[in-house]
Length: 133
Image (tube, rainbow, N blue to C red; front, side, top):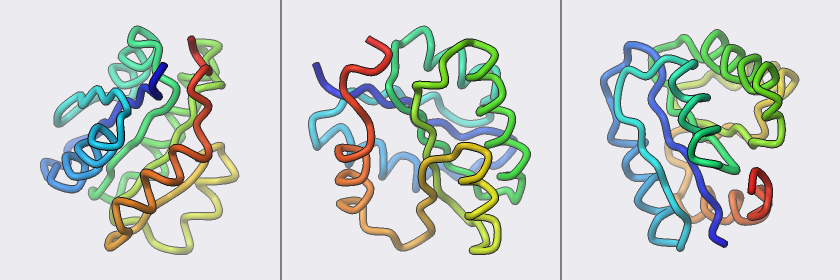
């Protein structure tokens, strides 16, 4: 069973090129990818991940609201008893915010310029294909 990943653009940011590039790279690597599109609320993202039986959620945040948006997704996963869904993300995230994001439960943060192969390898190594199944 392939790894299922929801790729999402939470909040008001309308720039989704990076999210689409990552989604394509994961799909090309044999994973099932559900791309939610722009302007998703954390509630919509978590609902999609639970409904689609995803093992991971990848968030792309360029708006500067990453601390709030990632925290809300993590909280909602806990409320849905879906803590086994791995949350990772990327975007314009200051280095100083990466450790606090990991402290709240974000598994990994990829900054601009990260090769897609690095992201694919990380997902393969850190997301169990059977979680959520």
